[in-house]
Length: 326
View 1 (tube, rainbow, N blue to C red):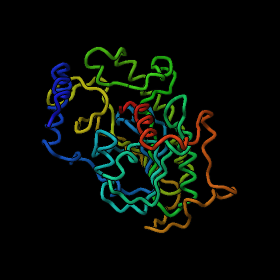
View 2: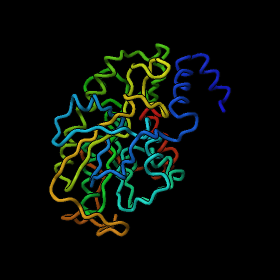
View 3: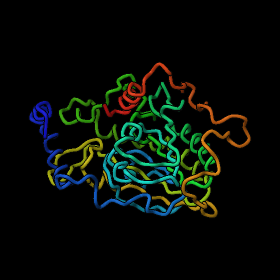
View 4: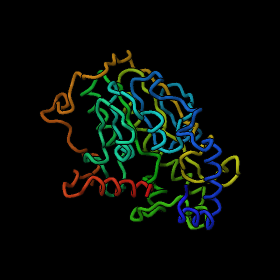
């Protein structure tokens, strides 16, 4: 059922009505996720590095990473949908999930997944207060720490880039980081104020920012590493079957731009010996060669530890707002 406010907004912005009609077509009215997509945990990998909102064609044209590039079809066109389709109600105690996105935390109860460990970098001192995101160098630090502590586990590392906020030269110069509410839907009624060309350039630069750090992590991690994405992004292309212009990554819309994702395979020595359940190291163990467990990153000067006075709900809302979800 739709609320009165949703119906009113659809009447005022017909493109949103067209989006909903396309969503009903793609989901056949009630599908929980894209049935044509792959189960990422059934694929062969020791380390899976996810880029957020990275479409295949953009990655193909820009990357210079080692390895063999293939493609896959994602089960979701939105992070929450990707998580629901791949981790819900599963025993994943052979996997450590290191994530820059608050989406798992926000939906943890509903997802009911069992990872060996979940490292919420966005609330563990990894948040960059200036750019209002988790920077890729921070993710490398936390991922390497997790790999050191859990050498017998699969490693799932979820970067935020190339997802907004834009941290490249074009993005910083043209998009107001003080304006947290990033309304993709405003593009439908000319309230956005940015051309498609500018948006593409900002996205491409965000990808350029993250790729060197992805390569650093690829070369540091043993075994088979795959670089992929949770979903893609639409920047003014036509959706289907109703050919309306689309922006962002709305759930339940399974166009090629939103579901065709990179799948780059890189071999770095022998495969890991993965063990389910108990690990050879615990989350409280220090990083080898140090006296203490990993501390908040120093790569981001403005990264600050979590303020105990801030509730979890407030923190999640702040992070999601910064990422344009609220």
